[in-house]
Image (cartoon, rainbow, N blue to C red; front, side, top):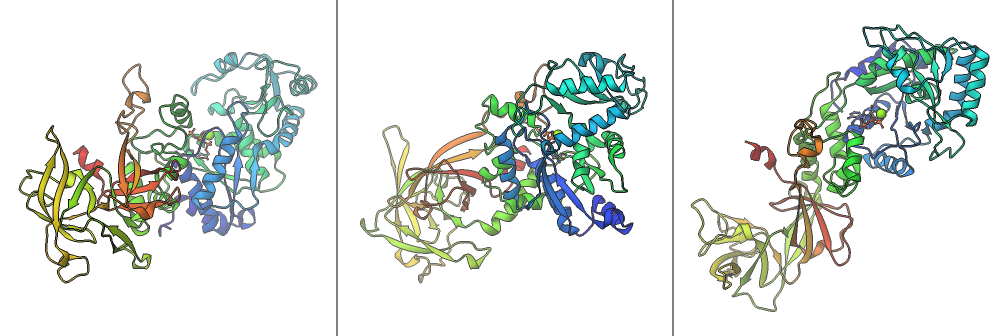
Length: 555
Ligand code: ATP
Ligand code: MG
């Protein structure tokens, strides 16, 4: 928790000092179930649940499910899973705007009775063309002066399904000359003969988001309605609705903050859906996406995301956060948590010619130098091991400290070896490297501290488990993918090389690892076991490199 209070906490402090709303603090996270959650939502989740925690209040999870056409139960389920995974608990406070369809309908009828709403049967295009501009007042609808009785009758017919989609709407009667466009007789209800994932075919009229959102907060006793900046000028409308309903002092207070934007990615659900539907990625949980399910599959931990949200804080100014900051937070967490193991991604066979053929030894090695409580384990060593192709050069430049003809290196937690011979096939490609080992240099043995310049990771060929390794790069080539040339869109900036698949070998102890297990392959980066793994085949996702190699590449 950041030591300094953010501006929302300051506002809440003031409200509490004034004794507002019986000194309650009650927030909510209100997703629309029309897509999977992304890292931007995570910021909002951390903020809303975090505020409740800080002030000893409550936070609801509420689905703003007012648009049956775009919503789906799959999204409802994934959203709950993601919020839980992030470590938050809405206890028994799971709500749906659709729970309030009856109350919202009654409220609409109340507004009609009070002369504050009317049915307009002009086409929507006409209605929007009459809205005017911020500097030019709107035009009144010819139906604005309909009698209360006629409006009641028409609205009833709308509800009963007597009209077709789009043939009329219910509008509030507020002020067509208001400087705030949202106050110019906004649409409250539209006709949609569509099945809703929760209310089925009970309704064929659905409230607009703006007519449901603020009232839902009010119905739930929300005290602080935290939302993103684009809703700032909807606030007078939400307040107007609540004023028509409230019989006490209690009011939800809307507070806006800047949404999170991250470099090298897109965050709008519409665009994420497009990537999924056009199969430009493998699904909502593709590890290259900024979705929470994608980040989870990639190997992100809930703590790394929560720490990131804390670090960036909340502001009133839109900006773009460097995705490197998210990765930094991830490395910090994994450095403490991920056991160090050995895996070889680009294998080269190394034969230790003076090591007995049928011998094997189990070498003790430390699981995490950052945390001794994580203990030690044993890994098998034998005559043939795999090392990384990149750790051997036949004709190395001066400052090359890895293996080369005649040179010595240490095999981590095992022995010091010396390269004696290079074996090639007919085409001249190196197929094996033959070495000798010095038995005195066994890890922990008398000569084990002898100085050599390089230490290599390795796995015993006979014991190793085969693994598919998926290396990810940024999904987009440019910092702001939305900035595309004329006639193109964000897809123009997709990075064609964002996924590379390798066949490697990993130490045998990893064979039965569960999906989601985080490890550090020594010298290579952090990796995570993918759910595609089976008894036959292990699959790893590279979560991130050990250091910010991307930043270097850019210079
Ligand atoms: P998108 O614009 O990505 O489609 P949305 O705002 O339509 O998202 P909602 O389901 O309405 O998605 O969002 C639920 C909550 O999450 C809202 O309170 C919204 O303000 C917040 N939220 C959405 N995107 C971000 C973001 N990038 N940063 C912070 N909060 C966000
Ligand atoms: Mg929204």
